[in-house]
Image (cartoon, rainbow, N blue to C red; front, side, top):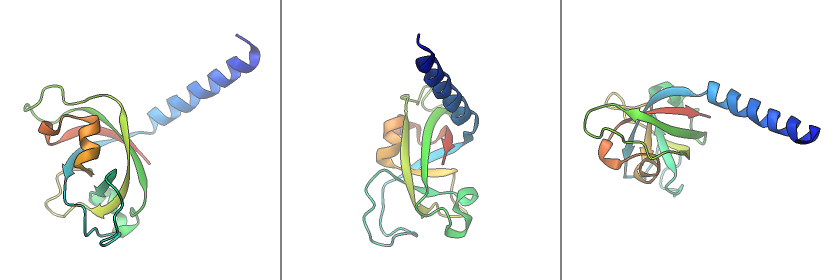
Length: 129
């Protein structure tokens, strides 16, 4: 392996480790009525979207933030292996209703189904902004 290639490989490895180390653990649920949203009203923001739970909402400062979400496991006995592998990137467009919000991030049904079995309903996740 050439010196330049080794340096690039090492830099990529370090960046990957830093990204993995900075991930925050939480939970995700899903919803399927996207408008109106607390951030954008009736403006369509697509389907790779999410609603922020209280810990992320920050009085609306979360609007527009992008999060990479990865399924880490189950929260209940309903689906023993809910994770499909991979991650999804979503844009915060709404607030997960409080006090009824049951998750850190409430993903759109489309986003949730990309990383987990929809029948799980709620999953353990890691997420990064």
